[in-house]
Length: 246
Image 1 (cartoon, rainbow, N blue to C red):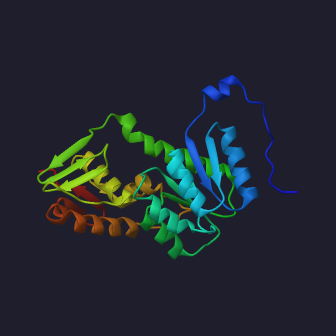
Image 2: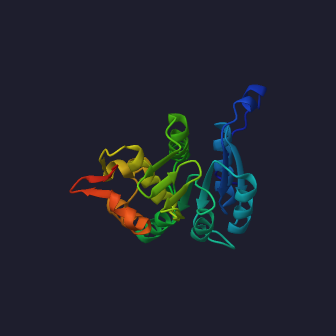
Image 3: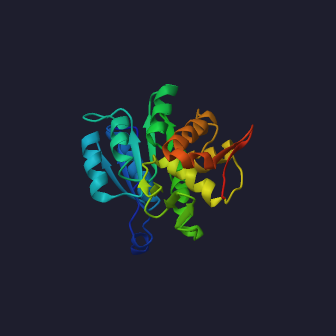
């Protein structure tokens, strides 16, 4: 018998009306997947699971979830490869589960667009808290009633379409690069510290072994991709970054 077991509770009509966001869990450990599904379902999330990378890819494309929980070690297609395929297709939060403690694995996942990492073994309470945080962050721009687009010189950014253009030509930005550019532009010239960018975009906390160099690396790639308009992203020495608004 499995050591993981969730107590069932009766489902009432009021529970169905209060159903929250859709979550896809891609995890090949059946007992762990079952535990996560039951725990999140108790919080009224709509949870669907896949046991391998290929099934996970198909499921995500079919369901179009609000958040993805993705294990690294998967059969058929591993989690990092699945992340590489999914990230250009969706901007929803992707949380990685891993038994690996290698810093390089985490750095690679973050570069590919992962929003958070949680290392096994972990508590379900911590996973739930991180999921709630990522969903709040993803929903924040829409709730804030912010501008849907901003143009500066030859730089045009459409926040709703996730499109960036320089001199009328489309520029492909990775999700984190786009998120950094959006935050800086919406800050209207205000300086944002590296720590603040980590907190807002990566949900940085002491349990994640990443540092402010991650922000610097993303800024460097962002500038290169923006070409002549990359000079708008200014470095404030020993503090952070800002966008030149004129």
